[in-house]
Image (cartoon, rainbow, N blue to C red):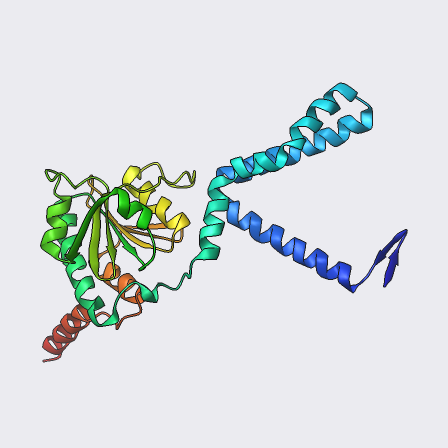
Length: 271
C-alpha cells in the first residue's frame, strides 16, 4: 500500500487503473476516424463546461447542463449506435474465416468467381459479391431474392448484367452456394473513405464493419477490382492478387494457375 497525500494506492487500485486505461485505449482505437469520436469529444466538452459552471455558481446554466447529462446514458446509446452494434457483432461472432467454404469445393468456387470477376472487370460491369459464413447475413438474405444455385461464372455475369432485373444490390455466397441476389447492404458512414468511391464500395465496407465477411467489388465506372473486410477497403487488385487474397483468406492451397504458368514460362526461357 502506497500513501499519496490523503489517498491510499494499492496493487488492486493499480490493476483497476490499468484495466480502465486499456479499455479506454481500445475504445478510442475502435471509434477513431468515425463520427463517434467527434461526438465523444462533444460529450467531454459538455462535462467540462458543467464543472466550470458549477464552480462559478451559475445555477441556471448548471441546472440546464445537469439535465442534459441526466440523459447522457440514453444519448450515448443513440449516438454510438453503429459502433455499439459493431462491437456486439464482433463479440458474438467467430471471426475465423476458414469456415466460409466446404474445403473440398472451395477451389472450384474461387475459380468460378475469379473467372466472372475477370470478365466483369473487362466489360466494366458493376458487381458486389459477399462471402458469408453459414449462419450470417440471414436478415439480408430474407429481404433479397432467394436463390439456391451452384456458384457459376456465367450465372454471376448474368445476375450483374446491367439489363438484368437482379443486377442492383449484392450476391451472397454461403456454403459454396449462391443463396441470394439483389441484397441491399448497409452503407458505411466512415468519413475516411475516399470520395472517389461510390455507394457500391461504401456498402461493401458497411457490411464488413458489422459482420465477419469477405466482399469483392467491381467498379462500374473503371472496372477496378476491390475487396472489403474488417471495415477496410483495398482497391486496384489484379486478378492474381485477388486469387491470392481469396485463397489466403479461405485457408486453401497456394495459387495454382499462376504458378503453373510461371513455371512453364521459366522452363521455356531456360530452354
